[in-house]
Image (tube, rainbow, N blue to C red; front, side):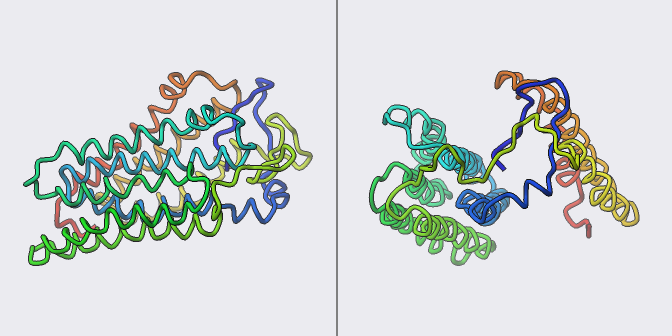
Length: 311
């Protein structure tokens, strides 16, 4: 839940009783605010990203920075749920640096577009609204702050609707506007539900809002390893998916083979992580690169399929 667990104490594989861990988690852990924010990324943000891909051009380019901003916010909220509020504002701002950088990239594209660009209102709408992610530094009434940012971008969303009202792909742009509004409506509801008076840090006595975390090298009597649990996913639903894809054949089978490769590369990465201390960020990036390349191969099959392929 809180990120990949490396082996900090021993070169032996990490053992963990997954079912015992789940049962020990509190209600806060299973229904945490972090989980709800992640649901925004998995839901409307993902749909927004897909629609931007269909629109293409600078809209698609901006979407990658928007996705990065939301993912960095998720990382920050996860940290806040695990620790008390830092004593210095400088430390907090340091934690927020990556979010600010991603927001800056979103607005940089907005500011560089030509006034007559066909997507100028798309880019400006998101550029004006994305600062809503800065609610985490608002000490009081962050809900109102998110609402203000919504209002700043809504004018340009209406212009998108007007500009593309009679276009052949009008429905695409209407869906795009609807999804952007949904993103920030859900964010406002999230802040209202969990952070009404400001960002809630973990004020407990050394605990975590994400639930108790067992010692990384702790051995549980009933056994079960992180690697073993992941292998079971491959042997179970992933293998079933591959079997069904073979029966369908064509591009579905080809893509399934690439998809299984992603899981196998991920397994190799997890095996490495379970038997070593966490290396530098650069080294981690090198280790995870094969997974990213395998994911790219999955998308290549999709992009290479004939436009009218029924599969």
